[in-house]
Length: 421
Image 1 (tube, rainbow, N blue to C red):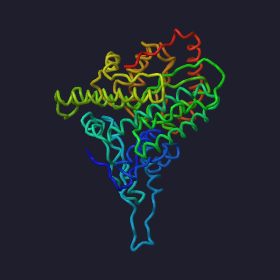
Image 2 (spheres, rainbow, N blue to C red):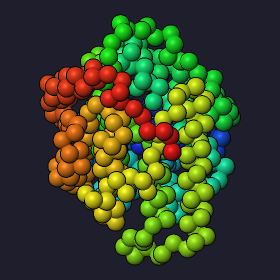
Image 3 (cartoon, one colour):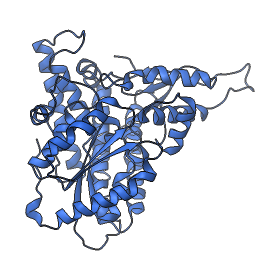
Image 4 (cartoon, one colour):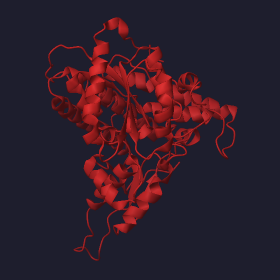
């Protein structure tokens, strides 16, 4: 495993707030200069678009722009010292790949963009998205903190998504979430375990003014990994946009991405990978159990009603009639399994699939398979994260929300949640 640079600047870059903020705070015991690369907002996307050739997918645009912005904000050369003093080397902590996808090419694109702007290359640290690499990273004291930090961020996002449609103003919820995140980050950076720090923020949403009582519709969010787990503009701000319409967005935790990677690591080898040994499979299964237990502890820390962290093996069974689980790319069978589960468990009133435009595996799934998996039982809307996404989403989302609310008014017997795995 690549050690974190104890004295270098370390940028955490991947999913935006609160995930990047909490992971950076968890890293500060091992790398004092750890910090988030900043918001993955439309300004970052625009900067990435200027630096990259046409055809780059949304995650690459957002992350490249955020990286260039953070690099530009670093301290310039100190000309007053005895000779120019260069800033500390820059390292980036990010997930390296999500299979046969452009995530695997991100480091090369980042390096080219930095060189084009006349900046020094970076050192990328972090696991690639494979079972063995994740085990090497997470089965360490640092990894334990990182796992808790991701779970804490997931729990904050879950509580935010539940609070948004029940609040009078979505902006109040977002402001309270930012304050709670800052509180948890400060305690974590000072040395507290992330979940212990999370417990201190319990009830963060109670000061938000409640809206009038109304029917709440629930929409299942699916898509490629980055668009599902990133927050803010990368996710088209769907929880905040749909909340005033009376819709709660059910986004899967980012921990599901870890579970999927660990599940892949225990399965049939892909490409030239060596077959997994029984001992390796057992180690990955034990780590997967830790992921599930950590998620339950994070929910308990915020006194949240436990929510499901789906088992990728179960999702593979649901998706198998529509896509062989051995076909990989993007989120593989996970997206189809989540859609199928929404139908079989009656756990949502509609489904939205968010896509990083240019992501061929995920777009193919959405265009050709999800409709069949839903069997016309639920309204379905695919949305692409692209420059026109914000302009094109409003009327389409309003139509979907109206249909979801119509279904929600049929009564509570129309909706139930699958017990947590």
